Amino acid sequence: MATMTPMAGRKRHTATRIWLWVGLTAGALFAGGPALWMLTSSFKPNTEIFAYPPTFIPETFTFAAYAEILTDPEKVRFFLNSYLVAGAVVLLTIVAGIMAGYALSRFDFPFKKSLNAVIISIQAVPPITLLIPYFGLVVWLKLYDSLWALVLTYVVATIPYAILMMTGYFNTIPKELDEAVKIDGGGTFRALWRVLVPIAKPGIVSVGAYTFMVAWNEYLFALTLTQSKSNRTVPVGIQLLMGEHSFQWSEMMAMSVLGCLPVLILFLFFQRQFVSGMTAGAVKA
Image 1 (cartoon, one colour):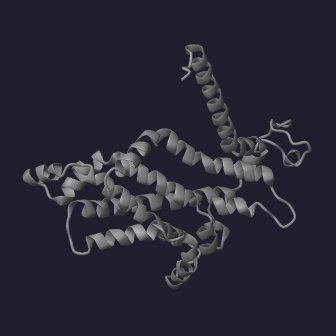
Image 2 (image 1 turned 90 degrees about the horizontal axis):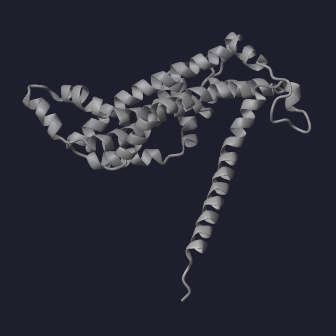
Image 3 (image 1 turned 60 degrees about the horizontal axis):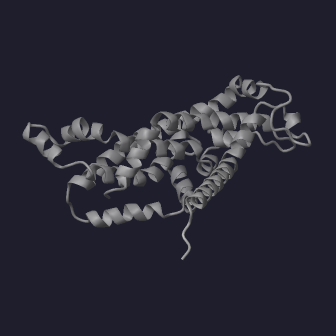
């Protein structure tokens, strides 16, 4: 049997590395190309976007689209609404997820396994199938065309994930910590909020990041459950820039860039906690 010489082994290793870098570069261009095109198009005038052949680097560099968005109270309101809805959803989801996750992790009660199964099964339901029931419920509660309609809808969608994640994370924390607090005279709530919550910070950050992305990027329910422009969010606001006879492409790209920034900044600052929370929460469930 022929053996591979050291020179042949090095050539094969080099060829493997070259093909690996080619594949990674192609994947990066495929994934990041549309985002780069969106970014460069946001600095072009609307006429240049339609130019043929298309230009990747703007020939006429302008901030007009950003100025139009940031000086228009109606468009600024879209961002304010998104921040209010996403912030409320994150807060409510985290509080509910922590308390429910702690209860499922630390206590035994009737139908606990059945409740876990229900929570998991809810995750498998396509959200679009719930659109009509949610619409009817929101109208019945007289919350139609309000930000509260979006907050309650998104909270219902994000709480199952938060419960599963926090339950898994609390399962990784020794129960002896709870017992030590109780020996010192503390109660259940003190053990939870004073001891376990600080330790579970990576899991909480992970839940918050996921919840923020869901609430910030959601389009279908925001379009259906609101009607007036004063209650629209960023995804719907981008769609409103498409008129009957003309599309404001440069403004659409600029608003899309501004809409991506909160999520990007969130990951840049909390990526370590996010990854840690995702992996730790998946160890035990």
